[in-house]
Length: 440
Image (cartoon, rainbow, N blue to C red; front, side):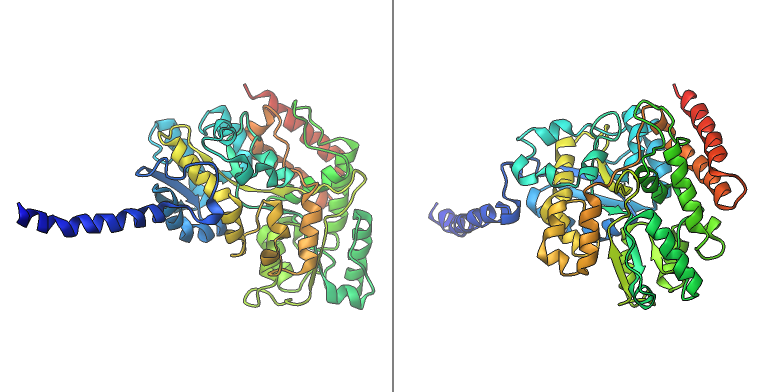
């Protein structure tokens, strides 16, 4: 008996030592101290599908920290987004989807919520058992970022990135010609004409081909138009919308040759190579322009807020998002992952890796802002206050991608001079109505 006691003594002492150490290990770091129990679902495993994307690259190295914080294991997978667009719907349709959470585009939400592929997050977001409202601070997201969480038929996702159309320009060329950053669309048109006339560069680069709808939406809203209303009333051929299309066609005259085929890659190349002097598209180009490995114009770039039109400054904002699968049997644990990934501490860390954040407070954070020029930070802060997302409609949102393809083709006809803006938009409106009326 004495020998047994002697043998058990070291085990007893080791347990006494390890117990407080384990308690200390389970205490959350100061930045994650909130009113929830982060260890409530320890021992569970969740499967998360990421799109191959800069946010995915930035956050994946931090996943072990989430696992240490919560005791929840994350099986992370990634694939190209085009492949995800096939795999996720197919998985839901066949009942074989194995993921608890996944990245996605916010404008997929109308279709995903109609099919009930994504889970509602409202009860998790509003229940203090799952979310400390003061710590998480949902209101910290930019207004447009908040709106994408409710883009479908119910609240089903959280924003993970932020971008918006801003003005980016070659300050050296502008200074040489005595030009100021344009504040309105009319000023922009006059400015890019002067630059093109000077032969120093093409005045502007704009999308005239694939996905031209993305920057065009901000132009349309700034002119007082829209594509359609929440009740599916088509507005794409309103006088205001037509005026915006005319403006795009006028600007395209001062862009590099072949503009009708220009998409995101081509307008990036035009700025990075110094071929064009002005850019009014997504802010995500900025880090690339500052990278000497990619850009020939480092040190020659300046930024300004998005342009003001007859209806004010209304840029098109875009936000990648993350959602929970409705079929997940581990929704609370999955919610903890969504909450952690979109929290201020984590979004700041991802932002410091170059991924622009959807939380307004981070754009005021000195550690983040010192990595960028003040004019870029100011351009984004001003622009994001009034930026909006694409209209969701009721039936229209279910056919969003088809509507966008139709729009691209009709606007291209205007850019190429094949049709006037008004009849082209009337034809587009008729096509929109056919698609919308074809929805159940």
